[in-house]
Length: 159
Image 1 (cartoon, rainbow, N blue to C red):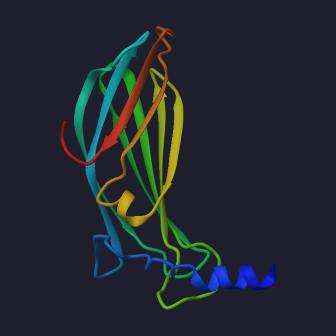
Image 2 (image 1 turned 60 degrees about the vertical axis):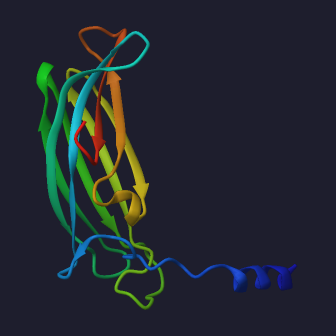
């Protein structure tokens, strides 16, 4: 069994370099550029727009060593009293130092709704999925009409 495990570990692909395919500035800063759009879904079916294409442009310094994380926050207000807080994290997990300043770098995107609806959603993403902007949806029951959902979508291109 030990021999099989050793063979599998030896044959495992090397860890993907953490910054491969990621648009990171030479000074170790990741730039997130995209949009947030609010929507309403009454009952069932497809949602209808409340407010589309609110631009989001945030820079986030990358952590320099294992066990560190950095964060950037953007607060958004939408029509109808819906608000959203977007939190972006760059995380350098604990572990042995590797050939790069942060082996295993990953990102987390959090979306918290408040005001006309409350909700919380998050995703942990690799660099290719996080940049140039994470794609994520979050919704909560509309306080004024609990049969309806209010939500926000983070997206990379304008709708």
